[in-house]
Image 1 (cartoon, rainbow, N blue to C red):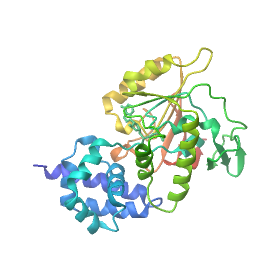
Image 2 (tube, helix red, strand yellow; image 1 turned 120 degrees about the vertical axis):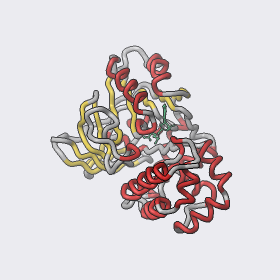
Image 3 (spheres, protein in one colour; image 1 turned 30 degrees about the horizontal axis):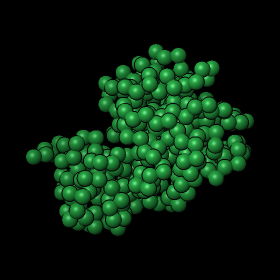
Length: 312
Ligand SMILES: C[S@@+](CC[C@H](N)C(=O)[O-])C[C@H]1O[C@@H](n2cnc3c(N)ncnc32)[C@H](O)[C@@H]1O
């Protein structure tokens, strides 16, 4: 039996998600508010393991199974009628939203932990427009990014000599089911079509030149991944939108490990996920990510890409 305090915690997480998603995905925002008030649906979620209750996973699973519910009442009915299939999707799948637009804030990549299908391992294959100024090669993946603050935008993209990823469950963009799941993870709303076009175009690039993706935990497989970096290359460990999924003590171990290595370290994560980057939001996310180089906070960025606000 789930206690009231557990349901209240879940409801708070869904209310926080509702606020975060309001601008980009009004439909998800309304559904998350409805969930936060629906004791039956909260009960369904509370019966799932702790790491499987997040709004993005729940809403993508509903969508994957039968489209985005029109409102809270339809969501309630679908959970009641289809609980077992929904539960099975949520247990077998994970939130693996792979958003190439996050590269506009990175422009560096070699060894990515929490890589999903590896689409952030191709920053040199994408075309950027920083406040209208073009950077990078011609590409079907066009990333528009607004910036504020004192750091000038780069004149060119770096040369990437190895694309190595680690993920608990690497996705394969050439597998129709995996690609369908990646598409289902994109939030419905005003920028959905643009994000789907970008996902498909980036997936086509990755299919032509596949990354090396190692299956396993980021801490367990980091050494194996670094062992694949070619001689003479600068290893850059990068991660974006991953650390909220990692438990606090394991996260601290990972941070200690990366700090101890002779690598550059680029993190783009929710506040507080890297020490010294603010107070964590409920669920680990929040309205902005913090971009860090070697543990030093440099900028706030938009969680799905498109904005970099450099600190002065
Ligand atoms: C929200 S996705 C982000 C994907 C990609 N970094 C991006 O920004 O587009 C989070 C990814 O982290 C992976 N992940 C979560 N915990 C992990 C762990 N302990 N070790 C390795 N990967 C993990 C998930 O499987 C998922 O693919």
